[in-house]
Length: 451
Image (spheres, rainbow, N blue to C red):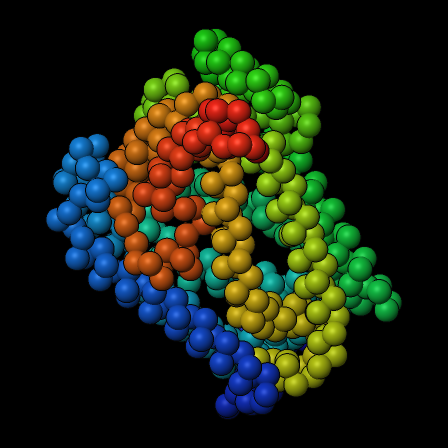
């Protein structure tokens, strides 16, 4: 390492060009970026106007169940989120353009200037990117939590708690991210022809390991978990036994220390699986409604939705590494997307940029499949608890408590929603609980089943 520290933080002609060198890869990226982000910008504008025109009307499916004041509050909350989202898109685009024009070359020059080996240089590069990303994104995060969420009565987190969470998150991310990146960069350099296969196995294995330790090591660092009341534990055990769901514990999480939003989920594998209920969810729902919501979550497990998603993620990750191996030696992609030289860490960056735009339709497909799975989990829940009212009523309660979108523009809903619209969901739940008319192919009163 030569020279002073200041030398490596000075932008010089050797580190960057005066202008970004455009080529075919630049054009491909910009074209997909404009199509993808422009389409989403239009959808957000349409949604904002849609909500504005419906702030004085209670949707028919919520008539008599939700007050006009609640609808107005939900419209105001969701319009604030949509309008803020428009600003966030612009904020992100500015950062990306800056990185393409100057940032990547400058940061890469700094990392290279320290004179370390390629692995350490790559880790330094990503470390600086992460620091800049945290600094750039911090105002956005603060305004989202202490601006919008506080304005509408959801935020319960203090600035001290926010800082504590941020510090703990960074301390966890540094070793985990460092290990993950080190494995990939080492294999890219020393793994031979099939480095991408070894890197895929390494990354997927680390992800499974993190998922295994997450509920017992990482989650308790951020939240307090306590056993639920004995009578609730009995109700959960009864439901889990009815649907043959194996679990180790059912715990209540203090989600209310950050937000009044609510949720339920399960984490872990096999004998270590834990059912987690937000304390806000327990407070907001009746016991029968809570069991219906839990039955819906268990339905995702029993219907193998999680295994299917894991399999899709595994195949998708393998495909990404295969594609990375193909374009890794394409020098033009580095020059066209903001770098002066070829390196393994630059390959990860430029491939990530291209993939995030070119593969964006797959995110829509994932949301489409998710909507289908939600319908199936609802059917499972209706069958498990023996009625449709509990789940339907729970969804309406959560809609009121969380100020869920009271409606969406059709195109916005078609593209963005990972869950069916409440109107469609309630109708499907009613249909699932209603026996079909007698037919010659089955006995009278035979239902559709829960899958």
